[in-house]
Length: 373
Image (tube, rainbow, N blue to C red; front, side, top):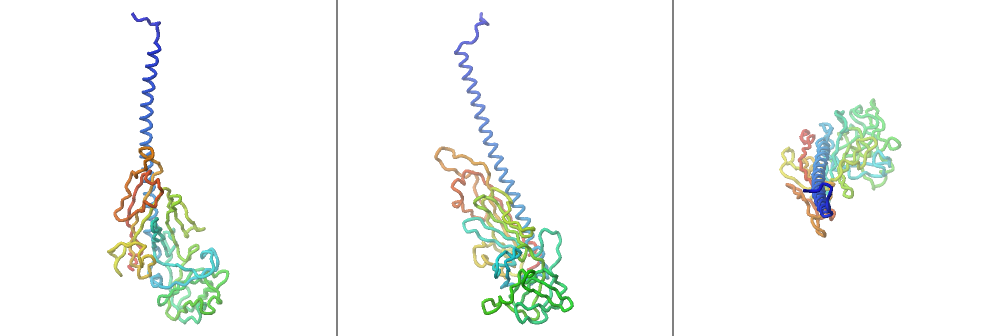
């Protein structure tokens, strides 16, 4: 008969401890594997959510490109040469001298070469307002003797003090700031000085170094409200490759916002123009912004841009170790797109140690289409 007072021998205790330790190791290993899978799944879901939100915001702003474009803004379309000036005021960019690179295209893509592209969306009225007051136009009734001369127009009431005026004729366009409206005399003054942010002094035109145009009878004058730091409203999207963040600059805010965070863990953005034949709304080809003339589209080119297609890559935040010591990481998700090419050799060396999501969409430029340009 077994003696209940005898207890356990040392061998029995040791066997019990070994069995317990083995059970603990098995449970710990199962827990570790499960936790790793959970982190991977969670981070993949975060990459999915980040991409969906970032693409929604970019798509929403791009669809509104050309907001405020009406029949009265037709003067923008004919601007082959744009003349503008800044008097060092922050209102026009903070630098003194001629403003270059002004473009009235509703949407512009800047090719990033081997890196991400960037997109600038432009508006002819404040995009944060659900309704807008259409730009008003009149015509010059007497020729300007000098580029700095006041404008004698058919109807001065279409402009108010502080408006910007776009004067256009024969492919030339000049941006002026209206400093005084003489309604009875039907004159618009654009004097330099404290209130004339965009107006160069008369001495600027002395000599032949700044041959700005003088407009004759019949030239179109369109008045509109200015944005912060630029004649028209603009939202720009770009990727900060150092921080892997999608950023946006927005001059419709007061004060203007520069490089605000839209979404983290966005590593690439590629974009192309959808081009239609002249005076058509049907896209027949897609072109890169790196190719001429789409790297700097003239007015005859940008009015053919009816849509933009975008491919965006987001990354999970979870680092996944190589399968064996000394081995390199292999991307767990292929970066495939129906049209875009991603330069992964320009990504960080450990780019394959993360999971990725690729998003694609086509964004129609509704205001361009509805304007029947």
